Length: 326
Image 1 (cartoon, rainbow, N blue to C red):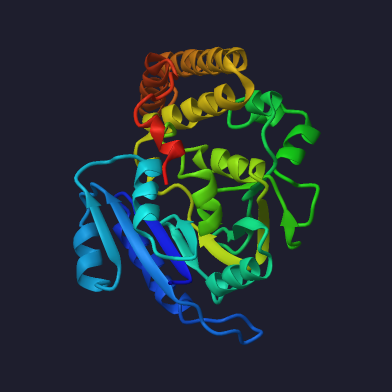
Image 2 (image 1 turned 180 degrees about the vertical axis):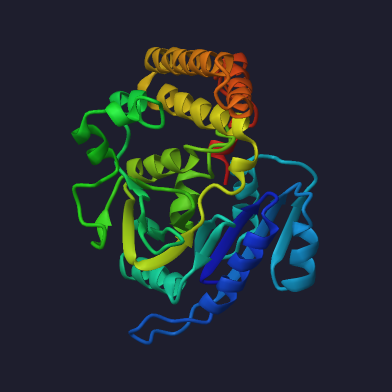
């Protein structure tokens, strides 16, 4: 059996995908500093209907990669599940295409998991392109967290609230158990996946890794942040191509998570709060547009916020059976 399957979901980031795949070719031949044997790695790329030549590039430059070319964008979660289902590895690493694996990160994660059989998920330390540490470890959000995090109110949140959520009270260079790690780079044990199931396809994108890690934890598996394995993350290069959709998917997934774990009343309260938040922002942007302040920018934001309001931030019902598959 292959040691590690790397599953990459791609959508119109050809050049970043090329860099990511090139880094994997080097990383797959590396071994940890204690000279353990190099690991065997397979790479699965699931392309979600890219129009930038990504599929052709993979076929021409990386023939060893297993490629699944979807005719359209099936969503981040569904595409990851496609990759997991064909993966052969003892471990599966979900990896964003806008990443670059450094040194022996892959072998380090596998060696750590092999030495700790109760660990179901390992998250490496993510770095920004300038080498600074990128926040990637989390505690489970409370409803209070949801009202502040990633809204215009975040700068006014009680300091302790977000420090706890982002685990800022613990050293960033310390191996530690956490509640969840972000999905830009998340390695899961095959045995644990078989127990808890695939990603919940009710999340089109965003919060799917939060839900998955919660299911791993509830099944008794540890989730560990491993800073000795490092991966550069260039942050959101696929989702930033469609701004209104990013807002809609992010907030709808947040509401869905709270409905799933905190009940319908909490979810509806959060949904209406978020809609009010966007209505307020739309009003501010309209006022700024009316006085002639950066009108093209204001018009873009007005259009984006209007689309969010029209969506109602209602959950996506299709393919929800995905959470129970495998």
